[in-house]
Length: 205
Length: 131
Image: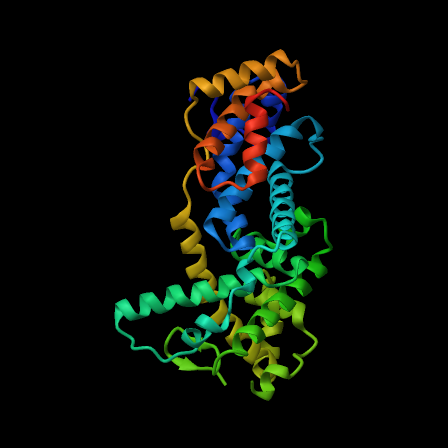
């Protein structure tokens, strides 16, 4: 590609968009769509919701492009928009009385989370998927301020500093919220099982 | 639930998460390792968080497997959307109308049975130049 998207910074691409490069914003979409989808998936826990939220994120970002001041990283700006989209989407669903993922019964699969399934490969693979589903559901039930920190860490694999910049929070708040999120998650999951088993090997406690 | 789950962890929670995620400095890590050797509460939390992380890894893989690119090639209808945007003289319309068209175009494709009512209204309004 002539415009060397691969070597341009996000900020340079945004500058080009604002200067009249008609493809530049599309380059931003292409560069960030996977990360934003993963974030939305972590926040909402469902593929369709995540896809819609990611789509809304880029539409919203484009609409507000002229308001991007360059005093923040493009990545932080996009992640903030995405988090807000996810939160407002979930709130709207609640108002409409739609079944949110976190309202689906955790007990349905929680037995599997702590079960002592056989350890053959297919069984372990299935068990791993079940565990992931249960954890995903439990994550979506966390309070928003805990969930956003946890998802940025676990799904986006950001550093504490990057999370602090994205959410405009002190570093210590990021760490304490992350700790609280992990602890709440652990307690919530342990509530339904014998304990948290370490990958099919043994039960802690 | 065992009493362990209800037990308050020790006060070094921030040190624990820094160490757990590998974001401690070398000095901090050594200091915390000495603490870990003496603190059963932190060892318990660390082990439990390790188990959680293996499940996060599975969830990340699910996210990765379910991802499909949001962008698609331009279509004739999306070009007309771009033209509508330009006619309206929006400040940014001429700059990125094709980009919006691209975004809306993938939206339109996903729209079939996937997007909610609000998204469908937005896409429809965009197509008819009301936005």
